[in-house]
Image (tube, rainbow, N blue to C red; front, side, top):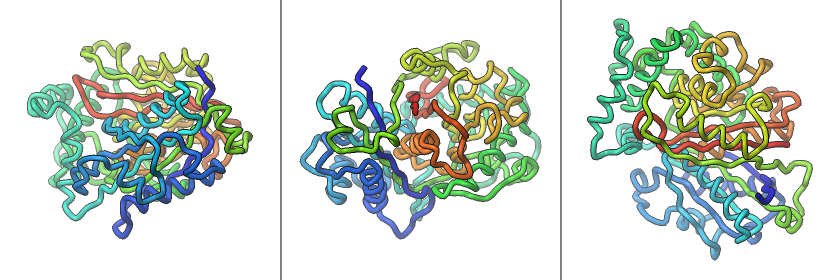
Length: 412
């Protein structure tokens, strides 16, 4: 494989941006990424745009990338619109890697942007309802919610306010993990409190308020065992990455000391596995493929960003990435092993729970954090001596797992 580098990467603050347009957010991310790489739009050979909400929330059903890019100075080059649910940004990054490996260009752009906060919050939440087979939505929900059978939620642990069906499914997966491995609600709260405490040091994060474990447990419920701080919010924001081959780096005159290697880039889709086949989980298979591609293992990973649309996601994905044995994620979180200063820091950015989750920008936002860590530029949230980093980003649901999963390994 041709050696690929991240030459420039940037993100906006994720959060609520009522006075900013989609292309304004995208333009900020692009401008910062270009400056970070030391190049201009004229140096780009191809561009991949990831956005989920453009059609449903803004009415831009087709060519959202061409429309957004036309307003921020990118034109005349191939533009591809990428939709892979919450893994869209990482999928754009993967396709940029593929285009560079194919030799069609030596500099490629991956950019994701979303405007999810609109006056009609119910309409925005409904976006998530399209992330599975809508022709059998009721059947999907019944099958997945049944995973939590056997654990009765305590009184008062269900919100009377509307929330995405996906949160009920995440909660069912939590309860399955609880009855299978002994995971506790307090361990979920430990993950959540840790991520909110990490986010205090992240200027790009949507939320920067620290929580204790007790405060997380006492917060308003969503659906047992999830409370409000354990769940990712609706977010606006954008993120962009400039990727290069060796020739591209030389052509744009990039600062080689700040260029980060892409050691592995993997996308996989679900299979019809059973819940008692966790070794076949799509994330686990993607991670094994990425480790083989990079010639590294879980023991080599110094810093990690995973998809924690709920706190349970971090526990499951820590296990899938091989950082702990199956069932070991909850106890490791409670012991502080995933905290800054711990054995393997996970989500030093604050994760999706705190940093925010603007769907099409989420994966590139995760990669921004890892590049920043590997450059040694993360300030108070820096993982000292970080040399290798791994990212996991999932999207949608098919069967009993993510429909699409991206795993990237970056190296200094």
